[in-house]
Amino acid sequence: MSILKKILIAVLFGCLSLTVVSCDQKGPAEKVGEKIDKGIENTGDAIEEAGEAVEEAAEEVSKKINDAKQ
Image 1 (cartoon, one colour):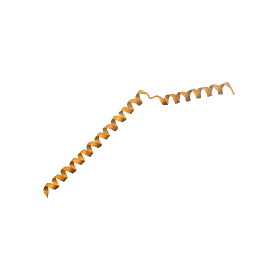
Image 2: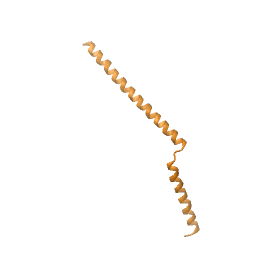
Image 3: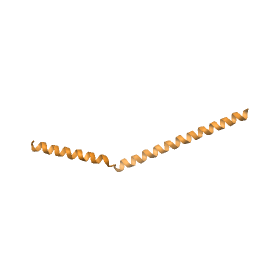
Image 4: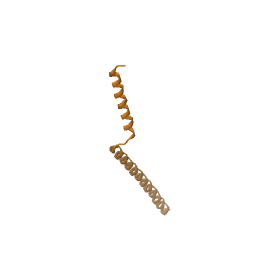
């Protein structure tokens, strides 16, 4: 095997090793992105719960109005 092939293999192995190691560690941008995603998810859940509560309240009011008409 020529010296050039050995150097190329060593460089490729080094790059591959760095790629594997860097995948395990989260950078600050990724951590911030995850926090933003979690915040958006929590906000969506809260909006959905509020919508359900409004819908239930509207159904109760409608039922009371219909009962009062009878």
